[in-house]
Length: 240
Image 1 (cartoon, rainbow, N blue to C red):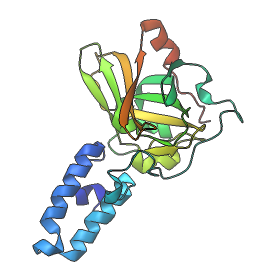
Image 2 (image 1 turned 30 degrees about the vertical axis):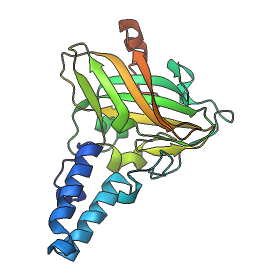
Image 3 (image 1 turned 180 degrees about the vertical axis):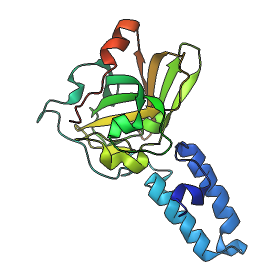
């Protein structure tokens, strides 16, 4: 049976920009106004919305659009977040804590279920606290970068998108709006990193809109020193 990824002509590991580019190309080719099949056109739209969790008219949103499949945000004052220990960076709109940075973990171990196209990955776990007065949208798999000691930058992957419901507790792997004062526990799976490369830095870039309506970005930079790397290299939850 043809999967949604097959309809779009992308792999399950394709990033958001690749999926959007493929979607645009297919729409131009199959649009009924251009002589294309309406049925195929609708299949493409359905595949895109299922894989990405957004509608095309949401691309130009201001960061408050509900891209997430489920609401996994919570009030940090009500419960102790998993990110109570870790590396923390406080920015203009987010207080971001790197709870764990687990290396050489398979998606089967992460989810405790068979995952096609698995393999060993580096996985970052964050607690994301929106300290601003307006909603912001977390886009971890698109805006997180892993910088290796080889000098190369490895992007996040959306390979968990079809499996986000299998994550335990509040953990989330999709783009999700965070209301003011709320927090989110987020997972980002990196693209494949060579075995002989160690991650030296993790960087997350958050876009937001100022009170004056201007678009700005802030970066949260985590430096992963050897001793810190050891302390973070463990899953922050127990699946048993």
